[in-house]
Length: 348
Image (tube, rainbow, N blue to C red; front, side):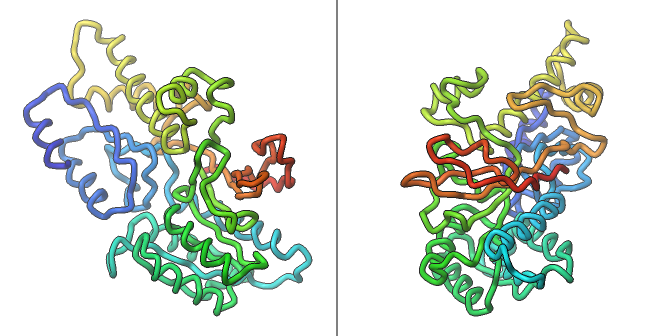
């Protein structure tokens, strides 16, 4: 894809920017962004978070970097441990990290940087990193073995900076190894896994066990009680948008708004290379936020959006499970009741 962009850039003077990449799990993505820097084309990424993306002049990130997300995970681990052991005398929380790899000995920039930041930021008097176990993404046998070892090492928390399919396997194994639900699992934004928010696709072994962070809070009943974006999305796809869809829309809308601002000031011209970046710098950096479905968006001088990190817990709802905001029980459908509020949502 990088080569295709370079070819279009060389032949089309009206290529104004790049919307993407949405992920930062693959080192090739990081390298592609670096290789495209000489084009000076602005890149607006909706959900990439790897720390290796920091300090790229032409990159605009809608999602917080992993070093920021890890700060919220420290608080979430404390909350998860407190939920499991409400009467426990103060002692260091035993944490085993399960780190995702793309292939054996090939790290994932997303998982590696999130695991490293969590480990580096963990207060030594409050947490003990017992072990860091690595597995290849979606490899059931390796994930099951890692979970079994974490149980043997008497982990209180399994920190899993991986993906929903990895968490699914880990939770199923924990359901057998830890039926009393004393070991909690905490992870990042890639663990969001919905049918229609807040209804989760995780198994029952996730209830009151799985905690994760996200950068948005989708609307409930989006087909009847939400903005035009939600209702249009529902009518098109038959489901409510998840975190990735929301942030993808925010990134695209921001790009189009910046182009619209430029065209208003240059009504007789067609935007070319560099014009989008000029408009982003003039119109979307701090002073003039773009209104998106769930608020407003603006970048700071480092091209980072000051997003809020929300914390969720998967809880039981009738015969299924739902994602409840840890800082507010209001997202639980009224038929399920609420399991309380903890108040630890953290901004960037």
